[in-house]
Image (tube, rainbow, N blue to C red; front, side):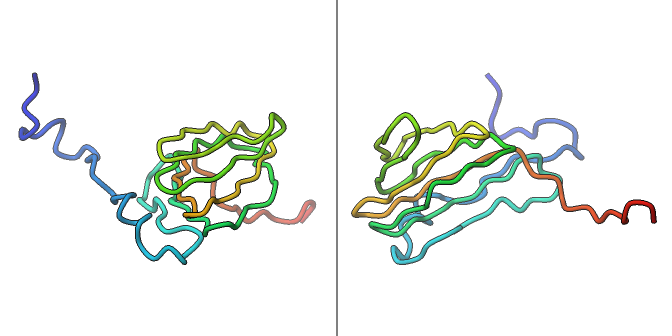
Length: 132
């Protein structure tokens, strides 16, 4: 078994690290909403966010046309709406949102906090006018 105290890999290799405590962030001000945390490390291949939806509010039906999204509920409760009908959400619910799928989210009495993870979107690129 490997000693967790011993250095691993080459000295110039990227280093895994703990980024935040989602339970602590989700337990902070229950009236806050939106992104409580975002993955912002340079050179990353993923995007990730901790999102809070306040109690008894919702996110309207929408689709992500290009990216699959993985969603993990970390606090609260709610309902995922989809073409298959409503699905209850609670801490520990792990949801796959395939690209192109239409979904909505409704937070329950205690609100809903979840982490989303998906492939990083490429940055916007400025393009010249055609024929210029």
